[in-house]
Image (tube, rainbow, N blue to C red):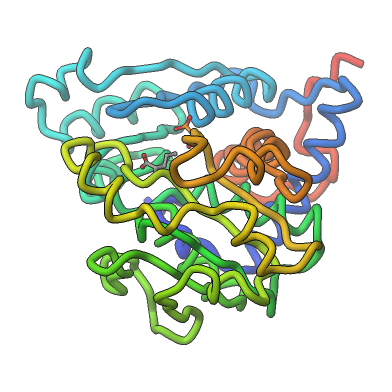
Length: 316
Ligand code: CP
Ligand code: NVA
């Protein structure tokens, strides 16, 4: 049985993302009109978390409710997974009880193994290596705000982490460039990033050079979840990689700033930037909801021909 999963950004083609963004625009519009759209009545999602979350949990849980379904939150340590139940066994059991699963955990291999034994679609809600739902929302946000991302330049400043890796995968799919600037020792690892080549990114020692000509400047925490033991060392190593007003001034006035959040003002970003006129971080956060609703609809129902979706319980 062929089951579609969303584990890495490059699991989907550009054409699939374009379809998802079209659905996102419609779903967002209906939501803003307070119109009910319940294509997922009687569908249940299990959300398994082994790391903290605000946006990912809320957007999936609220999104599932808004589509007429239900979502169940499972903290990994409260389940038998936290006491050593094999991931494969948990996948076999959980996927017999729910229709779709979202997992946020440490090594990407855990999500891969779960999906390999799941009867239902599995979504990666962040691993140490990737955060595909974030970049799906981010690219939708960029397009909504600034138009097509193809041929544009994204500047990534800071750690070459899960979010950076996913931007790099997206660059190959949407054909844009990423200027990456990391401190020495924190460079991109193309294999770990899951890249096909190195054509879509360029590394810059000086972050000011990376943001010149960028249409979008983005960054993330210096210490990702799971790497807390390195916090003090990273604060020293990343001190010159804060996105501040002076750095943004090297880019154009029309350049936007994004951050997946949560942010640490005064560390990776200056308050004047994240709270300033070029920042679109709140739109970015909101779009997690709308893009993931389109994703759940697609994974559970496939393509819906009728623009209003398959037999929705409109209630209107
Ligand atoms: N950006 C993001 O995934 O946020 P959370 O960690 O709050 O889910
Ligand atoms: N890179 C961060 C992203 C949080 C949404 C982390 O993994 O903690």
